[in-house]
Length: 486
Image (cartoon, rainbow, N blue to C red; front, side, top):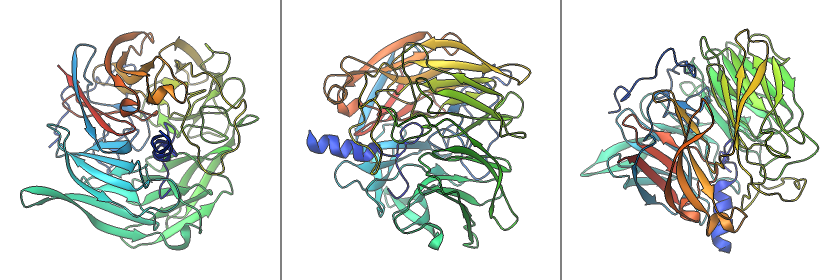
């Protein structure tokens, strides 16, 4: 995969999963600003290298908080439409001019492709296919502060892709290309990409190379951990977090950009890969959060058996966690492939144990057990006021088929839930998908609005993105669903 498909924690396989399954079968201010004293805030600091927080990355911001400062469609009546792109679309971002950019991977050919969507209708205005590298297509990308999509292609070049008026229409063009040279070994590929506050761009490869690139000078500096990386990476001012298949790394950089390991925290990777996960190890992208600056803590979920543990570390202290607490214990076994929501003192974790992905990354070890029921569910965990421990606030039975997102503007969690048959065949045939709204205070489902049946509405554990006007864009196996208040 030129830059790996993440599934929640990373959709590292979803585009190929879809291909295999089908082949076999002017933004301005938010409409309602987030309450600065919300129990679920503050949001992480705005990265000066990205578009506005909330719609700049798959996980909203470079801290991977999973939050948005914009309201969602709400718990009332909705209207929706689907843009068919014959592609899985895990990353959907919204620029300062209001236009929507989706990074997708085609069903046939697994070609990473960028689409420009009309914010008024969701119509596909322009597209640009990118060179693909290894078997899987691309996923992790971000929108920079000039509304250009930043990705890495199959030739290991970092691209900035702009959308430009072309006569009466639009065109997508590569405005800048920076080769990563020998920093990416032959046969390796980029899985994580995020900008730093100093203008450099951090990257991580599946083979465990972590590096920075200065797109002004072209200078690339890197180190090797010798451990696999299968999730994206996150940044806050002066710090970068990378989760390998064995440990969480907190890094800074030397003056020349060379990564410096501040601390390394090994975690319980469990006895084997769990069903509903794509690799053996954590399924979560690291998330920064905290009640003061939004950067005090960093968190992942380990792969312990029978239940994964939420691990919360104090960024300044590491590598001993301030808490290690089992989550999703409403079921006999649990695990997650999804990045968490982390904001203020609260962390929300989604259960993907047993979720039947149609395909796995090349080289993925056999799961133990080989399969399991997909029971779903979410947990909320709060860090105590002293920052010395954590406790489970609630467990919810909602069966989320997407990565949830928390709106700090309206205080609701938005996701896509699934009912009906959820086996490997059922998800793409008779399963029913719903726009679901969850109360973060109690875990109760506030509303459920039917969207559709089968693979065209299957969100494959991908995260929806809210625009400032309250419209929610949800990637699916075959395109993008646009959901708004009626």
